[in-house]
Each structure stands twice: as structure tokens, then as C-alpha cells.
Amino acid sequence: LGRATKGAALAFLGKAHLFKPAPDFAAAAVQFKAVLDLNTYNLTPNYRSNFIEASENNIESIFEVQFSRDAGGSELGWGGAPQPGWGKTSARAITYAPRGFGWTDVQPTRSVYNEFLVEKTTGGADDPRLEATMFYNKPGMMIYGQVFATYYQNNAADLNDLFCRKYENDGVRADEFDWRSGINERIMRFADVLLMYAECLNETNKTADAYPLIQRVRARVGLPDLAVTKPGMTQAQMRDQIAHERLLEFCLEGHRFDDIHRWGWLKDATKLAALKARDPEFNSYAPGREYYPIPQREIDLNPGYKQNDGY
Image 1 (cartoon, rainbow, N blue to C red):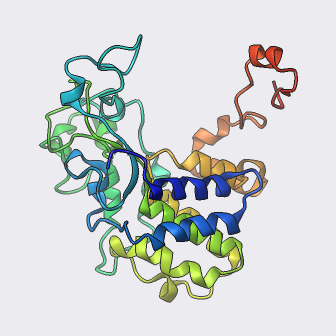
Image 2 (tube, rainbow, N blue to C red):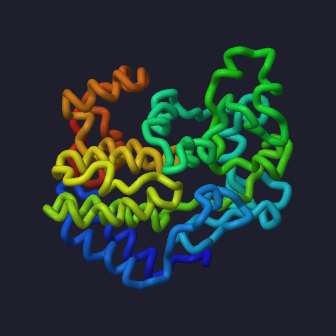
């Protein structure tokens, strides 16, 4: 709808309960169930439709930030002093775009690419979310109207690299050097509510009840029934499964670090070691840097504030 709704309020209230330092899983579950009980939302049949301009504000979208190239006009409007067109267009597309089509400031990791290959669909194909999420070298892969393998054939590094596809204007434009994108940012999707609800049920000793919620998300992309492939999971096993499901469903949507942080993985030696083994980027992690420092001026104005540890 382009505005906050009752469904959005319920979903974010549930998320607030879930993301507290001491999560209130039961309270969060109540809110997520209320979203389902509205019977307003569902999953879109096509996963990729959540990240393109042609299908904005769809049945899966609970809350999304509205952008428009037409409303934004010729002004970039996303940096510097506020202008009439400020904030009306998005710079995400050019920022994340593949090499040669934008700035390529963000790229998927090889480890998440491999995670997508862990499980085949019931038809024996790769998880279709992989191709909807990133560009990579595979037969027939197109990138902004060109064959991926042909475009990068003279650069081995790029040919074997991974590039973002979510929220890109691939198939609509030749590149992103116009700088302005009108693709809305989906902040809360129904898929997120389903997986957060499943997490709450698992954490309140209702692991069996989490299966059908997770399977709704998996079934959309043709993955086999989790109750058949992994029946009778323990709470700990289901916890890891949900982490896997969230990584694939929300890859490149800005959820992963918040999930890792709230699950305590950065303070868990075993989990942190696993993260470092998967992604070398985690080797630069320094304990005590989970939070930003509170500005000294704020502390001066309110002596009740205590500076975060490590600053």
C-alpha cells in the first residue's frame, strides 16, 4: 500500500519482542500469529518478484520503502543536503551492481553461494533463489541483456566472481550508471514473519509446529518437505536449520548480521570459528565491537548514559 498497516505494526512488534537482548519468544509468537490470522498476506509464487519494480507492494510485502525515478526527477537526491527530490530514488542498484554495470561495492561471498547448493529441489535443480539473488557463471546466465560468460570472457577474475542481482534493474536497463533506481526496498516480507514465527515456536518447545511454517517458504522454491528429509529434529537442530533457511531466503537483504548478533554467535567460540572458516571477512572481527560507541556529547548531556564496553 505504500504506508504502514495493521499487519506491519503487528509484524514489527513481534520482531521487537524477538530481537530484544532477552527475547520474549511467547510474546513475539502472539504477534506473528496475529499477522497470519489477518489472512491478508501470502507468498508470491515467483520469489524474484519481491525485488523488482514491476511487482511492488505485492501480497507478500508487509512494509516497503517507496522509491520512484519519475517522482525523483533528474536529482540524485540520496546524498548531500536535502533537495526537493531527496530520498525519492534509491542508490542501491548502482552501489551493488556487477562490475561494468555499476560500482560493485557489495558482493555475495563464495560461502553463501555454496550454501545454496546444499539442497536440490524436488526436480533435481539448484535452489532457484540462487539465480534470483546473484549473477554467476553458468550456462545461459544473462546479465543486463548480455551473456555472462561472453561479457567477462577476457577477465578470468570477473568470470569466476559473484555479483548481486537482488534489487538490480537487470532486464530493464543496460546498466545502472543513471544512478537512480525506483525499486522499492522490501523491509518486512511475509516470508520473514513465517520464519520468525517458526523460530519462536521452536524456542518455546513447539519444534514440531515450526515445520509447516518453514515448509511454506521452502515449497515456494520447490525444496522437499523438511518433515520428510529431517524429521524429529531437536530444538538445537531446528535452531540451526532456521539459521540456514534465513540465510538463503534473505540473502543480501540486510538481515544476516543482525541475526548473527542476536543469536550470540560472535560470543560463541564454536560458532565464531565456523563463521571464520566459511568467510575470511570474520577474521577481522574484534570482540567488543558489536555496538557503536555512544557519542560523548550525548553522555555529557545525560550523565545517566554509560558508554558501551570497549570505548
